[in-house]
Image (tube, rainbow, N blue to C red):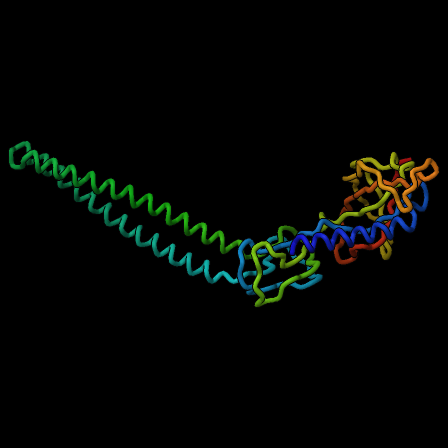
Length: 286
């Protein structure tokens, strides 16, 4: 499912890319055509189950750590309760053995004192010492079992937490793929999520103009509906050139040799910008 969604997003980008290329790679020497794109995040549950709650819908703005959905945690809740009951029982056994050790130490001390006046035999002392050793070993064994049981409890609680989908950053819900009550497989996308940092502008630069764009350099973005241009930083320039159709390898066709460039906008309002929206990119380099 995740692979199919990614393929759809790639096909969407390719379609937009061809549309941009079809209009020409640039309006002036320092202007290039592009479009709004994103690195989509697909949020899912790490474990299978029935989708119990879906707290968001398309277009919702969400904050970091906000709960987006929950897969039915009944199994994990029951398991955690049983695990905790085992820990409590072992803890009670532990306290009981500790009390027995206190008594065993007192008895050993008494037997040793009595042995000095021949009121107790060496066998009585040895027996008291052996009993104390047995109790100490029991205590160590219980401590180990308590640690293992707590580990099981923590693992179960962690598994339960993995059935909660939370926003990693402030962002917007782009799409939802499941409805409450439906059974979801582990790793199956439930919501698509975008953030200001995931938005990008993809544009194409002709081979003669590629020297005008540099990694980490700033560019200006003009978007319909916005009076002020946006500022973006170039963070990717393709190392391989692509030919726009038709592919004719000749000196006259060098202008059709283009490079894919990606820039990351700053201070983006997710509700005012739309994926696929055309953008004019202006470079300040001559």
